[in-house]
Length: 252
Image (cartoon, rainbow, N blue to C red; front, top):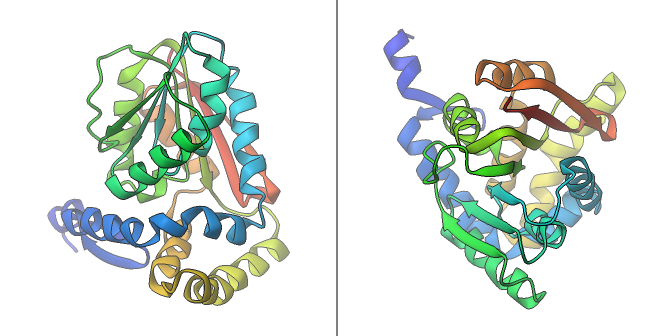
């Protein structure tokens, strides 16, 4: 494959597709799963995703009055936790490229009474419609692996952070133990599509989600990508044996 072909293609799960086609197909996946996304998250992680998200918010060390961008905010789990931290003098902007997911998130947050300090913006993480040096913290939870140009998105996140601001990336990663890795493969490629069929009547979308996890950069590779984008003091925490990792970096 020529360099030109490589630059115009990317991965959609295990398939090689054009960059534009990936955005359209990812949008289709999340349009399909939006209404049952929370149920499936609980089933897929046995509820542990809630603990991963709480840990992320603890690491954020947010204070009242701060400004936060929750990218790929989906159904609003991280936003709900962070809105309480920043209080009514602060603000959380929840952003997602997918309108269906953002709509479900808005409904859930309003139902919980989380209003007044939350704004909703439909946007592509690669082209953020915010000024330079704007946010105290940027989070992206289980969304970076679906971004077509991850390097471009990381540079955009760096741009909108204030000096001293923090980026937190919560994402599925590479298990650190061989036995866990084999069990995780069996679960992802055999059980997860069956669960997607039974619960959401959508095995193909959940097969893509499993494949997208495998194509995502491992812990050290993502760490290097953050450093290349300009972030400093980069580090990560392996959660649940590396099934998930929380990456942290600063704009200094």
